[in-house]
Length: 292
Image (tube, rainbow, N blue to C red):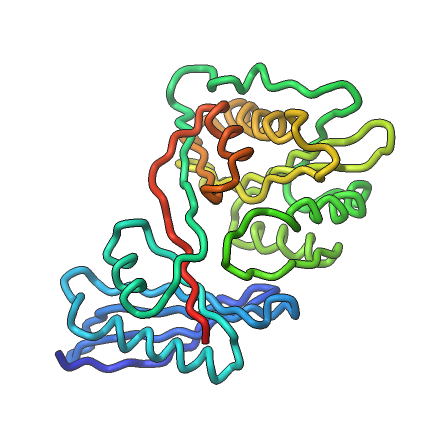
């Protein structure tokens, strides 16, 4: 099949990465597929890049996908990247495509959804309380100044999150990064809701859970990170935070019909929390890694 690749200018930069893009098209200009290569800019992740590649189902197995992949790999190598990441639904054509081209399976993610239209209560959410010595705090959008130092410190709870063989690198959080992430969500018109756990004896925040609602405040919301500091785990804190996010969503945004989450399949603790709160698996996705 005859087609051409066109490099595109992509304005979708984030505070911590930038993207390159290519379009595969037929001689008459009909789009066949696209590839977006996200290059991470943070020093601890400068060895990585992430590929999103799509080809129209009717145009597959004609070489466009391979050509788009080759362009992305060449650009990643030219930029000095050490590995290329890509994700595909387990058992999908994308899974077969990446597996056949040298990508290794680095991590399997379990995707789950909580149906908020199924009754007035959510399995176990109302009963998810806190042990003595803790209380919940929450906010919308950017972290309030009074909590910003403690919330920034609490982000280190993500340092040991199970990420298989991805080699994602340790993300270093400072106050500027925390505020930049919240601003990026707001700039998209979406709403960031954060629940955190306060240890009353120290006044420190020892866990957090973030939820993002779409710009029109309808359909499905998306959980971002949920984590608890190691010394405070196995006390029901993660479940309590997610339960509060569920309660708040039901009370304040009844047009939200579901909440989405994804968890590494070997993160048994968080998988158990999700099941207890009524989340049900929808599919599994594979995070692939190609050494460069």
